[in-house]
Image (cartoon, rainbow, N blue to C red; front, side, top):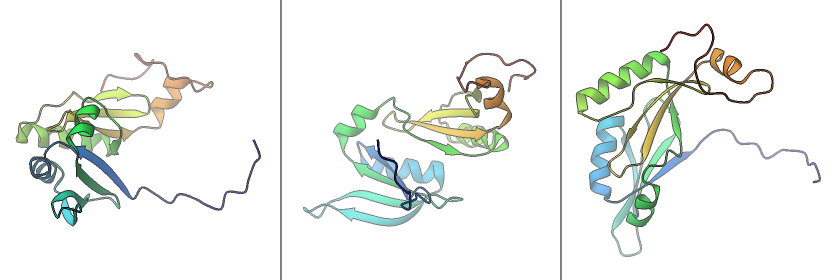
Length: 157
């Protein structure tokens, strides 16, 4: 394969799109859970709003919802992205989700930090991730192969 000079760089993430079965239901849920601020509504050719974009507070990323029951059903159970937070942030998220009555996983040690997850109304798994530079070094070793399980010298967290 020919090597080329890479002038076309990526500078960040513009938006994350989530397909939902019911736009009104998901709009209310995501707004409550993430405190989203509406940016734009998208009408289809028939004049019906089937998409919305929101600013995700604390980030430069937009979160978009698009009503498509077929895709939403197909993605149920998937975890296509993770939102970054801190280890302390995971504890705050646990309290926030508990207050809203939203079931969630415990905080676990993951391949490069700590993580937790919870389902949206259509079963898409939302992941929150807190990077920890010490974990991947211990977890992968010099050959960079992830090995799940207990780490020597690490307390369970």
